[in-house]
Amino acid sequence: MYTKLALLIDGEWIEEASGGSETVLNPATEQALGTLPHAGKAELDRALKAAARAFEGWKRTSPFERGNILRRAADLMRERADHIATVLTLEEGKTLPEARGEIIAAAEFFDWFAEEGRRSYGRIIPARIADMRQTVTQEPVGPVACFTPWNFPAVTPARKIAPALAAGCTCIIKPSEETPWTTLEIARALTDAGLPNGVLNVVFGVPAEVSEYLIRSPIIKKISFTGSTPVGRHLARLAGETLTLATMELGGHAPVIVARDADVQRAAELSMAIKMRNTGQVCTSPTRFFVERPIYEEYLEHAKAFIGKQVVGDGMQASTTVGPVANNRRIMAMDDLIGDALSHQARLVAGGERIKAPGLMYMPTILADVPEHAKAMTDEPFGPLALVQPVDDIEQGLARANALPYGLAGYAFTRSAATANRISEQMQVGVIGINQMVVTIPETPFGGIGDSGWGREGGVEGLESYTVRKYVGHLHV
Ligand code: NAD
Image (cartoon, rainbow, N blue to C red):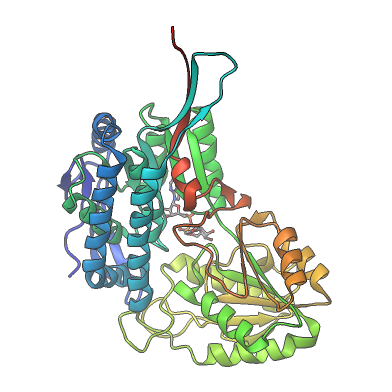
């Protein structure tokens, strides 16, 4: 099932490389799944050369033809969804239905950008003088380097590869070494769909070494990173030195305001379901819950009842609703944050510890009355942890929501249009869900402000970020 892992460089699958190798583990069993080759300088140079050479042909391929290849790849992803989802669950841990949903979502990014590439319009600007034609066009920025994490190994690469290729850029991607095979399956769908050699290259290695080498290369004209804020800062500094364009999709600590006029049961059940999606390892995961005091205990009761119904286990089992966390670092982070919050008089409503069973299983956890100075209120938990606090009014909820330097996603539940408008205007985040929690689809822009990063992925903006504008002033003589 979990076959040989490889790099993909210039159309060639490379199973042994000069940078050594590492073992990929299944988080549900902690057993080895396979051996991943690491790119050394030789392979990185080859990938850079291939991306530079392929760019000359790909940028001249019409957006219509590029779109045909991307759409064919999306169809192949859907045809292969069961297989790729199984691979994803084995290496990342999420449940099979979640994994399947992610593959379908990844395919939708290719569909959207296949079409959007055909709409990368320019414009004609009226001139000040006769016989002058002033045009603005969009051109691909050039070869790009993308770095993606382990929590969404299909959809996060898709969000970068699809717009890059649709815009006419070539790409070197370094997916997470912890979940390599899913992204290789996305690459395989693209090569099987007819993508020319060198347009997409996939490398693995020591993250800090690979990223620095690629960013410092004059061939790379833009980088796109999804991951933690500290790593994002480091890569942004490197990109600054070479004036390389950068998109940074970093951490979050999403607030949820539940107003007293909300449907309390629906708000509690929906927000806990979304909280436990991918075991809480999502940058948009709702994490800090600010509930108006009159409905606070009722909200907690519904939340607790919902969490009590969850079954934690191997994502391959049909009965599992919450999979393992993806690596030991998350277990340590959960223990640390929960222990600290409890020592600051937080109230344990559900869960609270690792499950004593094989695999990296953690109880879905709700903490109530969590004080502002508890570490979990400022450090992104990135795990199955909900932190709930009562607030006197919406004003106080907004003040707490906006208290952190992060600003990725935020949510609110209210039946009042006035409250919804106030929260939409005043919550300092890049994306907001009101009475619903889906905030990342291909046709809408996604990204953060402040410590959550720069730039937007998805939507019209997602394509634009892989293009530069060129102005031509042409006097007809
Ligand atoms: P981490 O910061 O060590 O790594 C995050 C990702 O960045 C990993 O995929 C890693 O391979 C990669 N990475 C690390 N150093 C790099 C470098 N110098 N160059 C290029 N890539 C590099 O954290 P982690 O333990 O894997 O994950 C925990 C934290 O990361 C979470 O608390 C969360 O804040 C963040 N994270 C965010 C997202 C997201 O979607 N924004 C996804 C995964 C992790």
